[in-house]
Length: 94
Image (tube, rainbow, N blue to C red):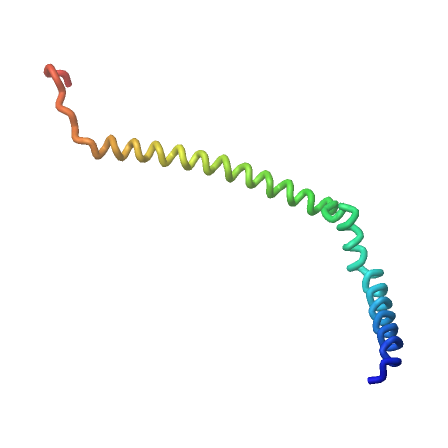
């Protein structure tokens, strides 16, 4: 390869990739990058509503988890009471 042919080939490659990148970034991909850079990636109202709904469900799930924990404690207590031997009544009390 002739050293004099490297510069035009390098310029052609850089030009080719620059034009390709400009064409790609002017489309929807470029607009998505721009929104991401501006910080407006999640401004879709439907998406915001969906996120709010999911956060509400997570809060309900956390409350349910607490209730299940309390119920487990009550069940353990009831099982211990049922498993304990019956104590005899004192002084003839019924």
